[in-house]
Image (tube, rainbow, N blue to C red; front, side):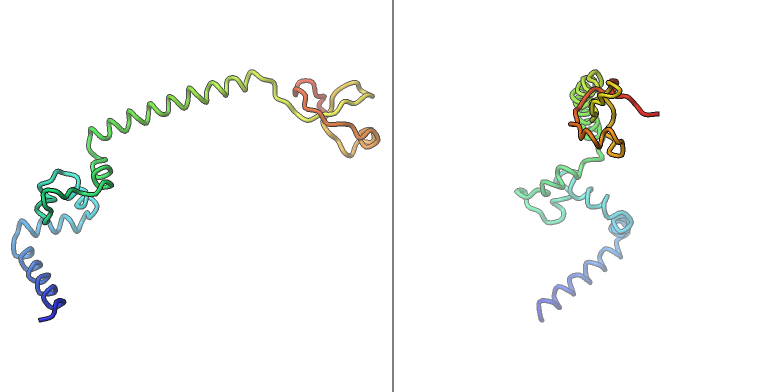
Length: 149
């Protein structure tokens, strides 16, 4: 008999065993309805289920399954919330202080000094005086810049 025929026969025998055993069939049906939860159950709930699938004592689920497989457990949710809230507080403290500092500093805008009005004005390339003088643009606090009506 060829290797593929032997494997196929083993698959059929396994299917027959599962379908004729009521307990095994319920487990199979549950796994088909929710394959993700089934996979987490296989890898995330101790060694017993993993060993039942042919693993030896030295083998364990992969790091990803061990780390992410138990994410829905209450202790992991509590840990995640604690770390998440702590991180948010640290970010708020760090960036909040920078925002407060920025709010105290005046907003700087580009402007040019118009000698006719003796005031800073926003750049206006269409203005005849601006065109004639070709002034240097400076950064000045916004409150010093005259706004055109």
